[in-house]
Figure 1 (cartoon, rainbow, N blue to C red):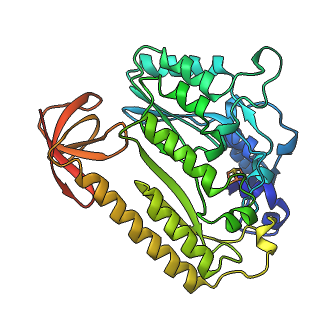
Figure 2: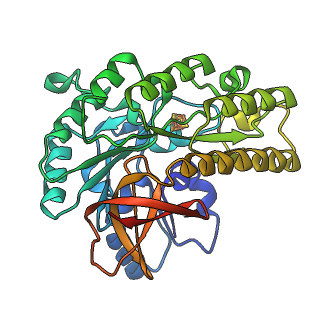
Length: 361
Ligand code: SF4
């Protein structure tokens, strides 16, 4: 069986693979049981991939909301119009579609009634939320939605998924900082710390603009933790370009960085670019950045030893219950009490394997 993005862009190739009996597009995944039944009845290959570019509205039934004991991940937006040169998503997931505020609020209210305290809003390109609205909803953007979610009783934390740096304007941060439930951890996907590389990636910002967004957030949220994604070994990335990235990352000091070695996606502009980078060089660059990320995380965490933090306790792990602070540090506490899904003050005493350990206060 194959479904999702790859089926969306490579249906014909998949049809030629004898071992694959069922090929479904991203819009079909909600009806997966029906298609498996059809497959069993027909006993021959079933292919159903609808044209994603024709879809204009958010597909409610195709939406997956993931709920843990304490936290619910809510998808509020799908699709992307950005066309970064390495990314297949705009072809596979189509244009931006936002879920209406009414539907999002309704779902979060239900989640709150079930005792969930934290919601994480996700989407393919959250910064585009609302840009597709017309009629009465025209002019409703992500910040407007966040202001509505802030008012929902029972929800105590609102966390944002990956954000495009262009969203971080003065007006956005001013309004965001007035929302007490917003978690002070933001994932800003930088991808490269070198303007030339960013240009080839078709990213729509410069490192200077990125840095001014970082300063806005750091001024508004004193304990903010910033995380990011970086691609190493993008076509044409010279030693000098990589070194620019490294220096920029050292300067920004992200809490954590997710490092990806560039790998070409068929059908994208970057896959046809000259000067593809050798695998060993990618490995070397990746290791260097992972090392930097670990150093940053350790330094940030160390600063909390001896301090008190508020943790939403999530799961038991042996003698510990572990959870996260608003700025997304993992903290473990020794206790026999059943404190899952409560927010507790913890005195941090130690750190092991980048995780903080503490006692209930
Ligand atoms: S990387 Fe993100 S912003 Fe760029 S095209 Fe892909 S989904 Fe859109």
